[in-house]
Image (cartoon, one colour):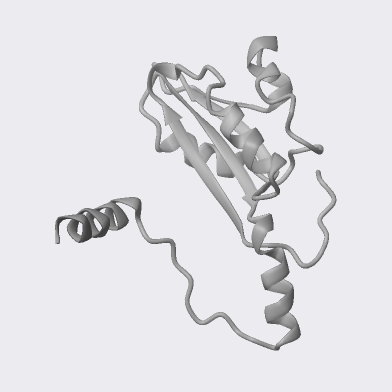
Length: 146
């Protein structure tokens, strides 16, 4: 597991389904770019597959074939250990049979300095929510039409 230093930025997870288990590693360059420019730090990364019969298999990077692992070679640091078997089972429960998912846990490292400043100022966050992309797109489209 990567060394965690304080202050730490907000930690989020993302589960991305691949219907038909068509994971090719095409998302890896975008993740690598976010890591390289300091936007995020990957804390954990795992994969789950759900067979046509409902059988669930959880996979770490070491369990993937060489081509799939190569797509993630550029990620800095050791990753793994935060996602539990129960977490991965919950993600698999949301999958259709014959599908797979990548589950990524990251620190929003861009916000670590802000977190430190908030703590030093004895500030308290009273609300924080991600605005759904569909809502933002709707507002932007409405503003463009106005």
